[in-house]
Length: 299
Image (cartoon, rainbow, N blue to C red):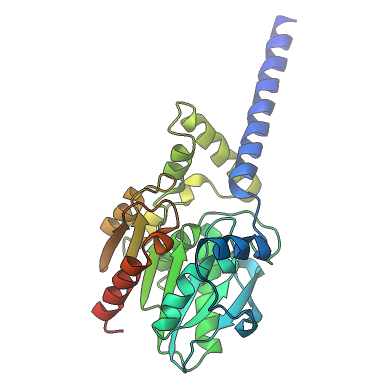
């Protein structure tokens, strides 16, 4: 009888652990996504978007990893150009989260390719894998962009937060791109989660449970979500931008990836900028850093 009780208790503990693991993984990987209306309202409240003409957006679909459909848009430069850039937004956001960057690239003479990352915007529901599947989606989008726009001579990537991590992770596949601009990327997802719980003593337990749940539900552990490992053999130039007041994805993440990449890299830090608002806090410095980076590449 004693051993039966012990067995039942152990079984209950295992079941509780599994339930906690699944719940943690779902929380981390399926957060509430913004609608286009919510995203636009936030952008409009924080800076000038009067230049944006929604009627210029041309929508189409691109098949990403395992046939997953990505809602994609083309936004033309004011003048005919053979320069293109693909912009990847942050977690819970959608294409309209790119508004703070779009005019900078339009002014530089780039056509814009915007898309909703998997599980975001108008796409079907899907878990966020923090760059693992998203980077393969982006690789498909790069290939599609080159086929779709035969006049293309220059192609860059720009990403914010999750989009930046996705752009960096994509580099391990040796995509045909000329440069990357990574705004507040994470080097690995675990350090972001630790910061999210204020480095609580429970952080290792929560991360273990979340990683276990992610593996059980989606076949991917948190150990796979490390963009910093994707650039060890990379030779594509990267400009990193990071707000020094970012306490969600701390600036150290950009410096870690910059140090790890084999190719050319530079880091622009923005004083007083929290997470993903560097282009709003100091647009002049952001534009200057972008201009100098592109000029250094002869673009």
